[in-house]
Amino acid sequence: MNKIIYQIRAVKQLSKIPTQKLIREKIAQLAGMPDCVNVKKLSNHQYDYRLRVGNYRVLFNYDGVIRIISIEEVKKRDDRTY
Image (cartoon, rainbow, N blue to C red; front, side, top):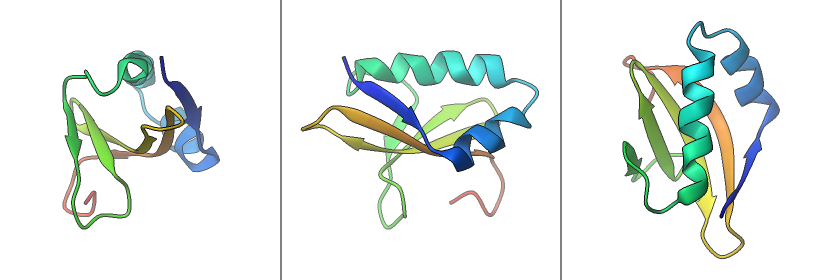
């Protein structure tokens, strides 16, 4: 199992989203990384991975050695998300 850590920025962004309960449930499923659905490795981006939850994207880093998932940002998908 992986440990999931929320950064302060992500917690603030998540608190403003009406469907935050669903997003938190999907984030909890990341504990089974790397066997997760709707997760894509990003290239040429500040963060390593993204989780797709409806119109929202959870941007995170995953350290496979220490097994820590760091939730960095939660954003609504638009032209400025990536």
